[in-house]
Image (cartoon, rainbow, N blue to C red; front, side):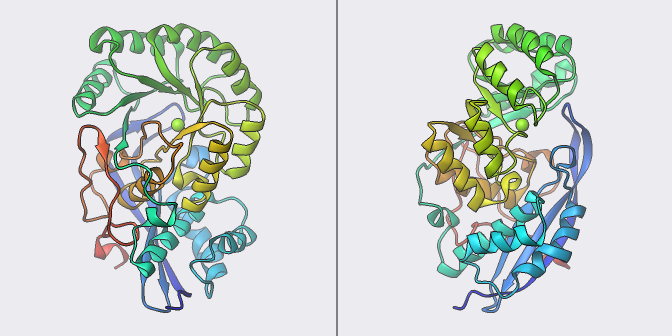
Length: 364
Ligand SMILES: [Mg+2]
């Protein structure tokens, strides 16, 4: 096989959510996901997905479609799918940033590499480190009763961590946490994600109070560029601090780590530029003794599959992951396969490439 990229196609798929999704940054009911198809001269086809996150990545399915059709896709025609660093050079030269769009392409290339060699993607990423991939469930912003009901339901399904979206009002956060612990007890870890909702001073006073409810970690409490605020919170709070929006690519991770500004990193495959970049970040964190989790931008089937291959193969990505979230929150998926949830864990698909089958009619 020559494994040369011959053509590509992009499709934006509007996926409806079962109920409104609200975090401190935005509220959505429908989400435009970007699906990429890459075809080789040998006739093999690989697929990738990136989900929209306009408020913190500046990208939606439609901007990704434009970036890929005009700049990224044409820049890699004629390249060998296995020359992944070389391909990322071409992508970065074609257009700066646009990491979600680049993620969709990178994931499609790994799907192709796996299909070419007839192996699952995790074997291209270092092989299997773990069989069971532990999950966390994310409770979006809603009324108190709904939040408690949802947390209760997901705990019964075996989810290992309940992550709760906070960051709009300190009073709301304190009331919510107090009620959740009162109703559901202290027998499970709680992660709080403020999605940059507070300034340093508000974050410090709010989370100091919230720590009495026993927190597993505090995710992105301050603005993405406030690395100093992140570091000062890490110094003044007992709970581990997780960086998410502050680390949207490999170089930002290096900067945050060099500034001692986080204890844990949220590596989203669809945020950082795809599987190759996620692996670089995971290796860098491991070298610095830092652990990670694989978060979600509410990707559906292809994105979740890519994250499963990443977590299965990455030793220090050992903190329960949000990666199986978009699949459940949306009304429809783009793949035919169903992931089997067993006691809050998933296993990595074993078929060639990503190991999932896309619905054929998406590109019609
Ligand atoms: Mg987050």
